[in-house]
Image 1 (cartoon, one colour):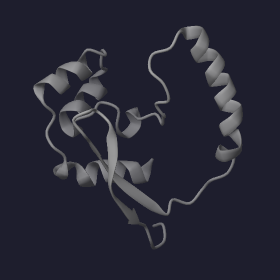
Image 2: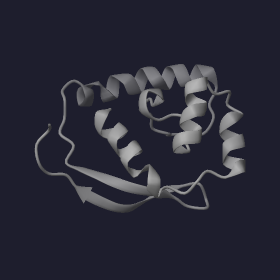
Image 3: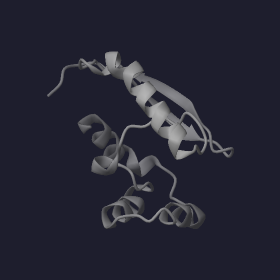
Amino acid sequence: ADLAAEMVIGLDRFRAPATAEELARRRAAGLSARQEDNLLRYGYPYVLEEFRFHLTLTGAMDAGDTDRIEADLSKRVAPFTAEPFEIREICLFGEHGDGRFRIIDRFALSGTAQ
C-alpha cells in the first residue's frame, strides 16, 4: 500500500486531467467525500486508502453467480496470498480509446526498503 501511495502521489503530475465526462461518470457511482477529494486531486476516486485490490474478470453478473464464483476463486488464490512476496518491477499502463489498459513500459526495482 505504501509503494502504491508513493506512485500515485509522486507520478500524479504526469497524468492527463480527467475530462468533464469522466468526472460525471465517476460521480454517478455515488462517491464518499474522501472519494470525491481523490477524484479531484488524482483523477480517480479509488486511490490511497480507498483502493481495494481487484481484477476485472467479467462483465456484469447476477448476485448468485457472483457469490459462487467469489467462493471458488477465494480457494484458488489462497496459496498465493499466504506469504509476503517481493515486488521486483512496476509497470506503467495507459488507457487507450477503447477503454483497455496496455503496458507502456516496465521498470525494474532495486535497492532495499527504507
